[in-house]
Amino acid sequence: MSKPGSNEDTDAEFDPTMSYDKYQKFVVETLEPRLKTLLAGREVLVEKLDGYAMVPAFVAQQEKLLKEAEAEGKDSTSVQPIRKLVDVGCGVVCQAVAVPSGTICLSLETHEGEDGSGTSTTTNIVEFTYAQAIVAANERAEALTQQCEKCDADIGECVNDIEDILATLQQLQQMHGVGPSAPGAPVV
Image (cartoon, rainbow, N blue to C red; front, side):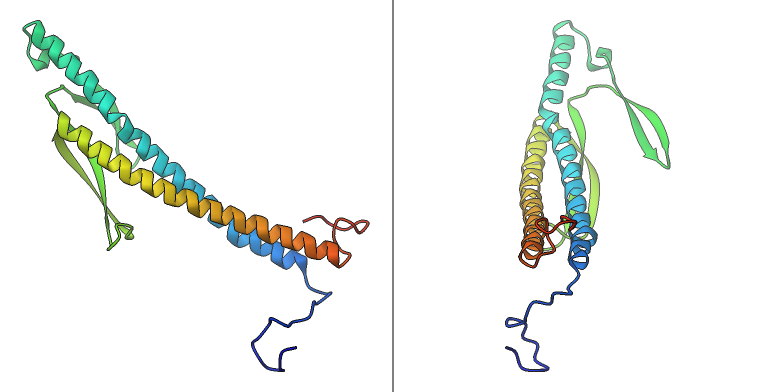
């Protein structure tokens, strides 16, 4: 048994009046929001990853169109232009038109911080040749894949924490006659 006034709780006796709801509330108010944040962050990463993964196929399509035009003796301005709706901010959308020219612009994010996970993010639009764009997209996809893997590990850890706490609470309730085995007792 711990000495009065000591901070040791290793020998603490079970308090039959403890509030299981308080611990369940901790899970609901702390761990579940963390899990939701991690899942939302992973969704954003996967969306970005999907965009970079599409670059090689897009480049191949554009190179094919340029080669076909060249084979027919036409210049690049005769190739069907690329049209895309672009959000320019504040809910304003405009249609961007680009004629395939052998270059492509990619949006690249950089993070300030020693390990690349800093809180400050800068987005740069960089123009690349098609070959450079494929390399840059693959490099960015690899970095995003690593971030997804770390996020997956964090999600798994959070889920395990939630499951462990709820299982422990359920065991405590059963051991002390306030769990599912007791008639009319709430199940955690």
